[in-house]
Amino acid sequence: MFADYRRDQLRRMYLEAWRKFSARQPLEPLEAQIAAVIADHPEYIPWLESGEDVLHAEFTPEGGRENPFLHLGMHLAIREQVATDRPRGIAEIFRRLTAQHGSPLEAEHAMLEALGETLWEAQRAGLPPDEQAYLRRLERLPGARG
Image (cartoon, rainbow, N blue to C red; front, side, top):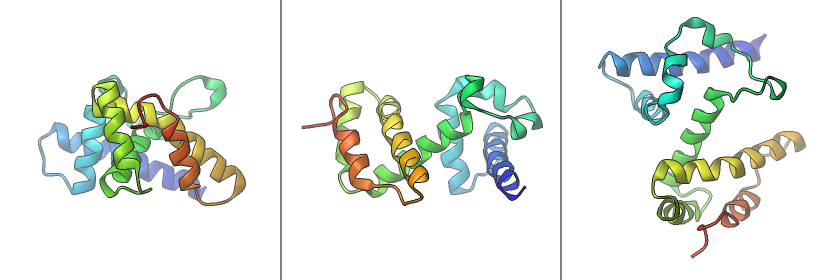
């Protein structure tokens, strides 16, 4: 029950940030980050604007639908990692991938699978994410090495 409540609260943050952005209302810093990543994904906007039902939508591997909240959240995580260069070296990898792919957004998309795999392994093992394994995955991406 509590996990669903927290999930719904988190999802509501995305909806509220986008609503405020669309209404040109002042945004808190985190809301501005959320609105920016949503704006980078116009394919999700009609769905996010469709109403409260999106708060309770289920996304399972069997359903074949990508979870927009997870996708957007991973972009936010990568942006924070790059801004803080944590793990150390990720900002340089991101710079190279941006040059390779032609845009920061496409560089992030290239990085998403490595982040997802790292998080999945950590969750499965019940351990914190392995930053060095994550960096190794990123370094194997085309264009990531100097």
